[in-house]
Image (tube, rainbow, N blue to C red; front, side):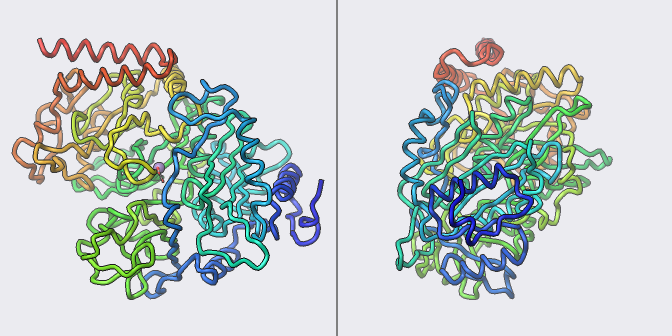
Length: 611
Ligand code: OXD
Ligand code: MN
């Protein structure tokens, strides 16, 4: 079936795979755009789209003297974060989505979406974005094609993925590719003028794991709309990974070189807005160590032919949280943002540059806030939205690692799970073995941040930091991790697993640990453990640094802080194990026996420690 649109105006690339062309025709017929553009990924194209968006008011060009080739976007105030309550996993069977996902049967969801997508792109241009997650041609990479009616999404996808002709050429007759359809859900009637940030109150971010499709309606913000990121690289990829024997995880990747010159690679999972970008770009405060960045959000990990766990960053850019990223906290990120950056929902300075809370210690006297209103430090509001973002190419990072695009992936030496916990969780603890590590991942809990809608500060379970991102039953995800562990064990090279918490607070409500660059001390301990160079002390919850094990040279901690950072209070831990049991009970018997056993062993150890 072909539409007049395609035959009349559209330049369909000659080498486009027929399945892609037919799908594009089908979506055009459904959504009825005014025009169709196949995105080639060229600079000229980005240039044209950014000019267009400056004209329509979607983007403001920043002062090129301060921020060359950079733009500010202000979203609609109703469209500022991922909407987890509107995110759906539409597997055939409810139990395959599991209790931590919103489930709707695929037929029912299709019936709901059909009228919403019908004519949804009227008055707009439909863009076709072929993209590769992972270096082009890497055996670990995967392909997708996103259709969108938002030029902001096109330009952002161009930063976040390898987009355009290079990716389209990878799709041939037998290649698997994931189709992703996105509309802002705001058709324009003839003569109607557009708003700078079109969106709709009717939001659906829907995933069909069996058919590996994504359909998103109503939002143009971040993970709701840049479908390569959370929707593909985590939700759909986690399902593909389960079926193919690998892992798609919400993890940063970094390379560390020790003073002795040994190179390590780490993968670390943290819930959203817990400082992943800061950790990925850490400036060590301890002499001799070097940190280089590979990725700040997502890792795809697969046991390699040599039996070792290898990982790639499937993304090509950073979509980082701006507030809290500052000259004193993450100077590397600030350097990365020198230009070629899209800022969304930050404040605008009078000199045409940007500002957000935490960028500098002192706020400028006058700003325009993220909603376009005049702002001063007395306004009583934040100038930037707490979930305001920067979108920038990873290759602009001054400490990007030379192996960040290694098509074979980097070998992982250690895996870290973290959360934002005011109490209980120690600064660092090492798992006894892979199974114990899987238990640690399964029981991560963290205080909620502004990255998604919800009550900021509320403690919630966030297993593997994947709560909003696992495309299948979370308990099956733990079984899959156990299987991967077995495979790695057969190869004889199992990475060690650790849990960290930079956010523990003392009785005065203040953080006990300075964080940021000082976290290098914790990473040093982790890597010295991997290297077999430092002893550890047994505890009911795992291996803690032995007395004087952590390098605290030159660091002034408050009296008693160290003891509080590692305090294991058996009673509050036992209360937490009760809560964990309740959490496990939700999964109707799908929690793997090995994970349940870890909980029972932990309870036994805690009880014994009281005697
Ligand atoms: C992100 C998130 O944007 O986790 O990375 O919300
Ligand atoms: Mn994330």
